[in-house]
Length: 127
Image 1 (cartoon, helix red, strand yellow):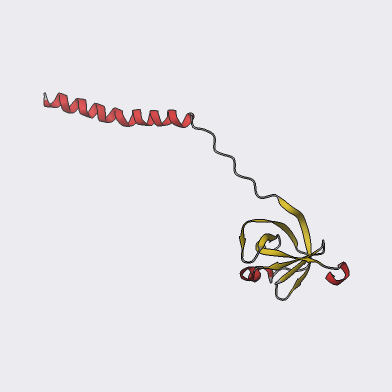
Image 2 (cartoon, rainbow, N blue to C red; image 1 turned 180 degrees about the vertical axis):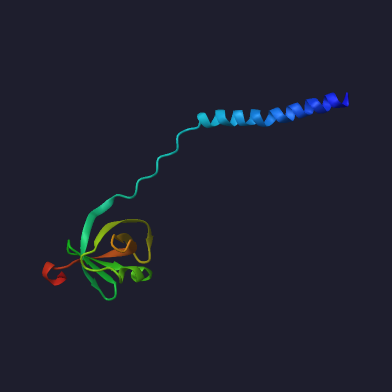
């Protein structure tokens, strides 16, 4: 009798993992497709060229005559930017500092910096 009970328990134990794997395989077939990745924030300005970097990366002037002030902690990145670099300007998800609500992304150095708008410059003065 003991051997019959042990035999039945072994049979149940051996069948349980196979049944569990089969049940798991069934649930993976009916899972919802993965959610789409949220798109990046839209660009406010397409790629533009830098025409001036002043005061150790503090001020960046773009070819559209806009001047931007770089957030102090990000100046370690912007100091390496050069005239002619292509940058993308976009809104930041989170405003940092005192109204640094935009971000410049430099393609050459693969770096970004929080910036705030300083104004428009005369075309002749910017070059």
